[in-house]
Image (tube, rainbow, N blue to C red; front, side, top):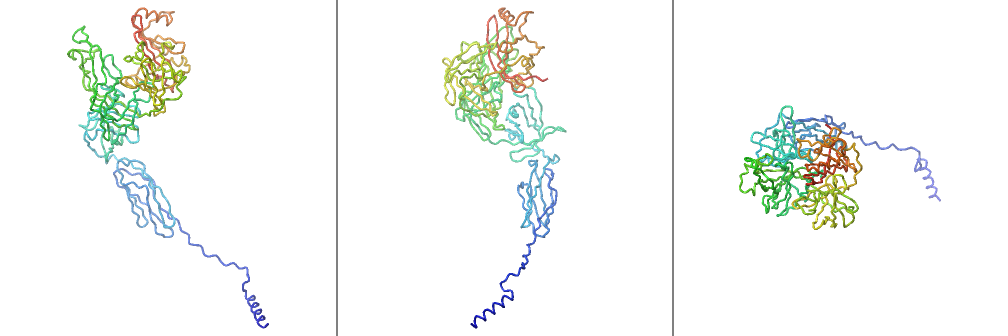
Length: 618
């Protein structure tokens, strides 16, 4: 009992002293950690400097807490260095002439706890006062040079010829480096006898590995460009010579085999009545490929083409001789262009043969002496890579416009009076169809039935005993094209469904440029005037197409048909043409062009082709 009383007294004492009882008083919170101030840096973050000049850019860094600061820089070019001492950042730059551009450098400032980022913009300007005058040898300049930041390239050949290509066109050029560098750019697409578009004088002001910086021009008219020399060439299987294959285009193949058959372009050959003729042939030879080009200079057969024409003795009034001219290829070179394009260069000899020992200096054609034609010639063409595709699945029960199916020297349609034509393919079923040939009035002149087979990779059309192989391709502009293989070459054309809308007289009665001829001969413009002031005798056909002639003289009250019949029956030479529009893209009309020549009361020859007519604005 005594023990219990002692415990009770002790408990009462603890309660009185506060013990485990809650008094209602909150203890103070712990003090907050000290605040870290973000570091900062002052200076100008947009700078303009000159090439070939050393420049220091200074920034001042600070930290309110006095923390030790560090700097890191990302995306720094090789010509940029920096130091950071006593919170002062010094950025030292000395860009070269190949660094002329805007550059962005990321700077990070840190105090060990917090960091802040800055972006330094450095615009490097040209510095003509520090230009050099660098001389390269003729061999060092020879090659393919791409203009940085553009769709232009220069191919300089070792013999002083060359090509300037821009986007999908090209212009031949002459160049020399014996007394400075001069480049004489010629009219687009021309061959030997051309007027210059303009002359360029080059000064190489800087060089770095395979790059040169070139000043073109003089005085106030100076353009500075950067050229990079191609050191590799990439070859694909198929190329085309144009992106507008409504006009004439070639299919060029490169298989890379030791023994290869290659299509060559002799060029737009000016030779008497063969003026403005695009000659194409093929040779068989052996390719050798280096890093920057592929060349065929060893041939199993190097005769690409031959012409047999009548020539006249310029020293007499009457002697006419039939002579053969052979086009024998010396070399075919594939040179790199831009955007995987190639420049194909063909060097060939024109030889006089089978003229019974006669001296070519005494013979001429259309006033042109044969001796002036003979010799070594070169031609160039731009090659654009294209993709081979399967035969379209929707050919049947439609009529299509494609490449021409006949030539005068082929026997597919020997009974036809057309020299060439037959671009209309009417697929009546999955196995049969017709080639259609339009006459001047637009009605079917004749047709040739064919059977056909879809092999997936190609379609074989059998016309009589002749097989025509159709292959299909997708152009870079996503346009479908088809090629027909002829004896010595393959012709490529856009392949479009023939379903023309109705065009009115207002569409036809305008003045047009013939785009095909204007592309070939940039210093000329072939103009067709169908307006009210036209010099032609014209007639609108029932299908809306337009027939015209410059060799008809019709009487008052005489219809066009009556006039034409009368003149043909009289035995006069009559040239009749017809154009039928089937599509329009902006100011360009795509057309089927037909021509017929009558002599001695009968049709002598004719052909159908495709043209593009652009509305004249001048």
